[in-house]
Image (cartoon, rainbow, N blue to C red):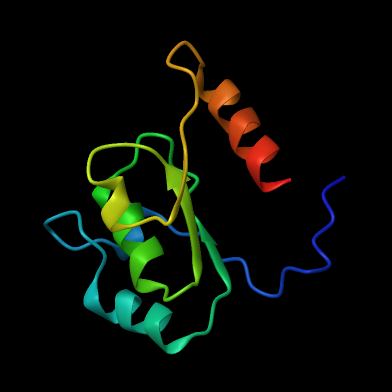
Length: 100
């Protein structure tokens, strides 16, 4: 069982609900994230969409974790590079190994 005792806020969202017509995060949701204080933001999207990458960046978190990809340096200061042969489950295993 995952110990969530140190997690005080978990935000889960969907592009359908929180994206504009360009498939980018809506301004009101970006502003919502900017007003909060986050220590860590983790982008769990293994395909590295611009939507989730932007949300990680605007969170203001000191630690922003995501998978490597095109322009990932702009959004994350810790990047996970799974082996190319890894399936989606393998990518998440690599991520869990890095973050403990």
